[in-house]
Length: 300
Image (cartoon, rainbow, N blue to C red; front, side, top):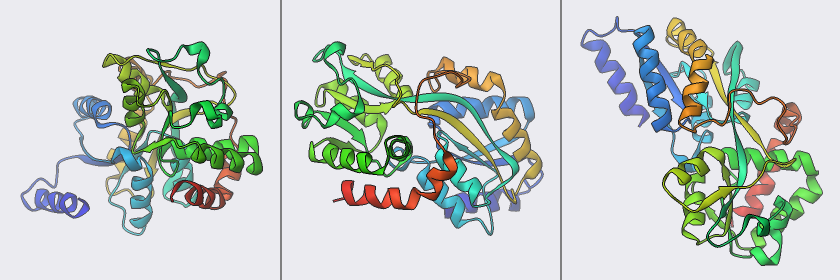
């Protein structure tokens, strides 16, 4: 894919389009939500956006790995992640310019429940309850190695402490959950009743509700992960002026409001919400240990 992408860029230069203003974006935001934002940016600025999207199964992680591999010769101008951890990881490795990282808007991690088969009062009241025998083979989640599920699991390790967290992960895996490729798949399994409850993102729950699935989101609590979008300005961006324009544009309130309208975000400002308070520096320091533990438990 990258070779084709680079080839198209070279072809554009050779055919006389070198003066066209372009900006290259690596984005984990869903394509259906990101494309209208890019189109409006182009309308206002005259800068054409060349996006590279990621697959749902490895959301953000694949793009982060690509950026790290290209660090010496970056192809990307702007990184738009739909969660916070990987942006902080990339910033810590020096991939973004000084003051070149910003957060905007938020989603949340929620339990999702099939309302045809389970009354909300009967649903698990906490993540700890997902390991109870009554939920054996009835819980769905995406792989804890990728995307917002990974971030949530790593944040829970800090929130609960390593021993309680590891015991919970082992008990959850032993309870035979559906571990699937992506949060939208979690919603579909719960909507079809193949699983009764799932752990997923608020925007995927909203998308399932728009499709008419009989699902509802559980309430926010101290175990909820609040997930802002993140935007990073690449160190050595090939198109620095255009990169700065898009970086600034994505932080405008109008962008957050447009994403809220289509339920890609829940709100514009994540202040005063219940949820896990994360020490990101500590989480990054412990990340390798945490991910090794997750691989041993969930990749069997």
